[in-house]
Length: 339
Image (cartoon, rainbow, N blue to C red; front, side, top):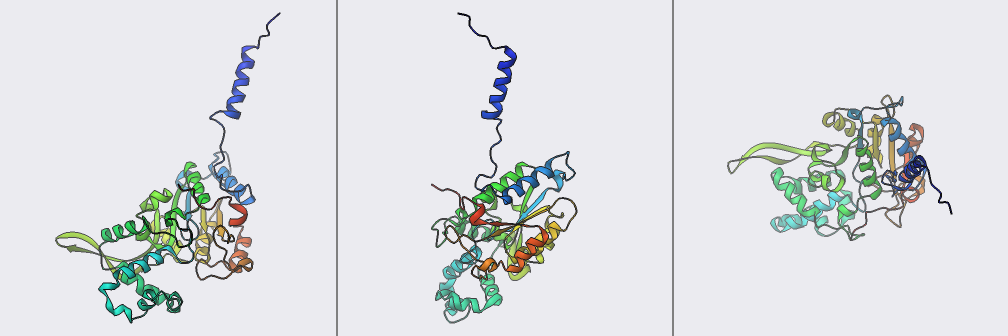
């Protein structure tokens, strides 16, 4: 019986096809926690065209700047901002050294666990608490206090570290953008000194690429050592119209991609998408009460003073071509898996 013989060139072609289809060269899905929706395709399509040198929308790596809000965009912001949870915990730990706080507002409401009364104090009450808990120490001391707290503090609902309450789809997006030559920045209303001790470990975003609100600091000598002393005075608020200002001061270039989730991010998206060339604006819409939270009030969801997403913002997104990422429809996983 005559043995059949496959020509060498056909073997080579077959092996080549097999390598493409099943070997290490196969292109894995860079965003597996994202459902195959129009939002995901918009992100993939945008990255493809700005990184393709043959495209009219090609953007050099030096200009591939992506900015992300933090609270509600990269990690959970309900029932209260994580930095506020830190401030309240710190105030309680400091209370034995301040017996007068038992009768003074807004400290009394914190010690009594009366957050409703605390809310009535508004912005001024929060500024008092931040001044009391974030100032009067060196920057190095604050860095250690923040690092110690964030390494053990848990979210009250999910019973996991706050740093484990980050959004898996966004971690994938950050990684995907960096793999495609983007430089990723946090541009947050949260404190820059609160975020910097842990953002590289959690998000892969290094300290110099964090833009946030800050309190005033002053160069001093303490016990003969040169230090930066934190003062009970606001230096800069990186929120709303402050975000484009912070981008200009810290980054020095207009982003081509911006991601937010609330009215606090409106001006950042306007500034980003208002430039020439290819631009992309993304808004995370919290509409998944079962796996995370649902709040708006856009779309008839409950109103929230934290991470407010009104119908006017939804209308802005439609008018400007921004992509609204509804958690319920677009993400098949919310938080990373933990042991």
